[in-house]
Image (cartoon, rainbow, N blue to C red):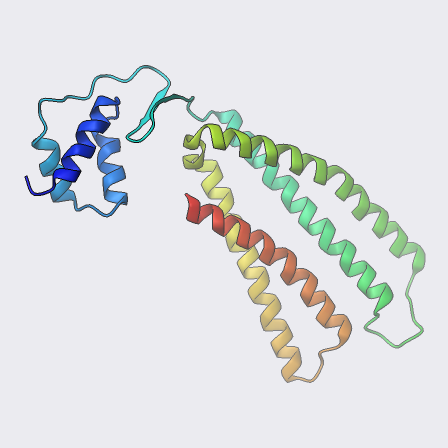
Length: 219
């Protein structure tokens, strides 16, 4: 057959207990056409894939590796991680916004508003940061390490939904901030206070967006 490299890959994959469905998926991802893959699979009838051992997942390059399928607990941990991420990001942004209003007020110089109210708000933001940062760090590290050892977690439905929902929210936030600053610039109303608020909101949202966009690309 013309595609000897394809045949060799299929033979090797079948010897390593990889099912035909997984072989076809990997080859399609690598750019092979379905008709060539199907022909190569039919042309190698002598090597039938044996039933893989329970809880085993193979790869054509690295043999068999013991892994477990994602569970509801994995999905639950992802939900907790993203909730703590949202609380962390919002609390951090609000803390910066509060300091900007105190240090670079957008109202007449000399006016500082209600100091007691600002302190009360700051206490709330700091409390949220104290709680959310350790929680996010814990779940982030735990999920990252587990994903390294078990690549099947990347296909978890809850993970994909939360990542794409986060990408949508952060994209809307960044886009809205850019539209807002352009609109105010055209009206001649861009103050230092407004610009700093824009930088804080855009920077935090863009950082989260960039990280999870990279996760999607890796998937």
